[in-house]
Length: 415
Image 1 (spheres, helix red, strand yellow):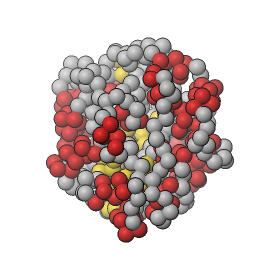
Image 2: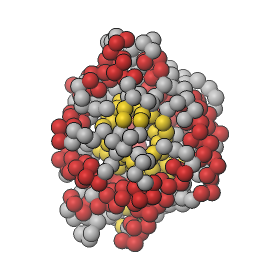
Image 3: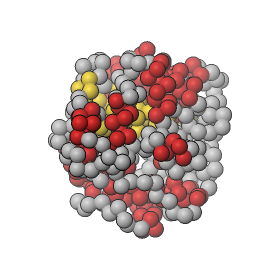
Image 4: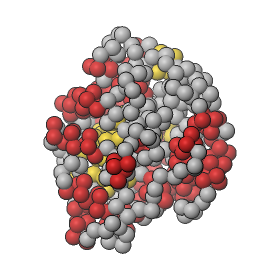
């Protein structure tokens, strides 16, 4: 599939957020969890090299991977950056400067894993309710239910992290409210079965994300963009569905959220990876996995800026999605791990599509692991000053991932 130079002008146009913040073009690097922080949770030389490479990618907006709000009990995987206070302000400042050195804007994705933290990192995780992650007992311990005071402390932690990273020079922040992490856990009736002020009804389940947004906004002010990554659905029976997701969108829009990034799924039902059975083949062929939901949002909240991530591979698909009015920004994740110059090449008319396709091992239960490890290893190569290796065998990637993160990462995926 190809497109024309004239068509690509759509993707080259700046985008103005309602608060006056300008994103230089319509291509954004979506958050990708790098697993490259130093042992103390700071962004070191490997993060700098990776983001130095991505700084020249041609995107208008560069969103970091998970930055966790609790380094002791809240890491989602080995190597997460964690920001609780100002002890690593100098390193964070260098990270912001590096990320913006090519002219893009830089936002930090802020997160807490809740129950979705490996037992090797946190043997006693916390969550809205004491409900274990389905089918993953060997990797994830059953969580302890959060007390009301602990929930309020977590809300403050999100805000503190937002204040520090923007103080360091990042232009904005994104709340991670998707993929089964803590915000997503509060939103889902499967993982939040509380009967107090934080659960029991859709309104109470979304209270946590609303309070997080309010606390962040109070810290960073009106001029700093505050965005959210939100599931269209978690693709689990009885879970968080599109109708309830739309209610969350309405509530956040009324609060003043600056941008919504649409995604979907959890790591037990990984629709966002394009390998889960919940995605129909017709959806994959349409490229944008969650475009139909984005169109629903656009119809009901026409003034809310929308970014869509998941499945975009061709210039024509990206242009069509933006020109249709369904979305404003195209989110690119995996293509940038294999082709770090893809956005610039695409905008210049030198390429029409990414070489990325879902990686399949041939063993159904290992497909998610194969997919994740393939792209993680590409990031690690760039962090070491090497180029990506797109044709590297899946078995080598899985082996390297296990050596870095432990054999438990493989066992958990099989559960």
